[in-house]
Image (tube, rainbow, N blue to C red; front, side, top):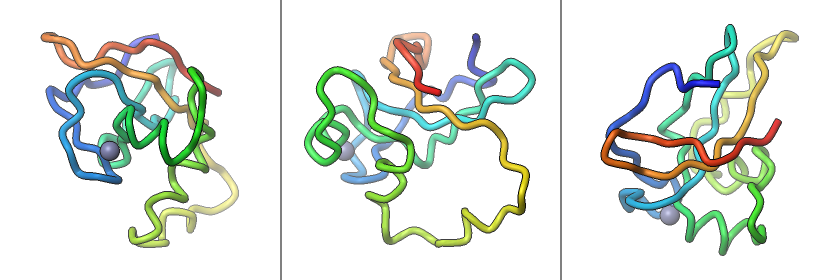
Length: 103
Ligand SMILES: [Zn+2]
């Protein structure tokens, strides 16, 4: 599956550092494509330290919960929710490369 768009740079939503190696990128699955939510990206260090995963991606809710400062309106969508996944990504010269994903 391909990313709907590939941001050229991502900043961690926890520590605000630019993600230059690997990180985590929540995405919505629509029509067989990933539509990433780059504003919720998490760098590898924050994903590892704060979520405590070991080589596998944290649950999407774990990542969202880290960002308790953000507006809480994101859950206000009614019954139908698009499918969400969490991409384990690596930044390359061409943009974002998906290493793995979680559904
Ligand atoms: Zn970070």
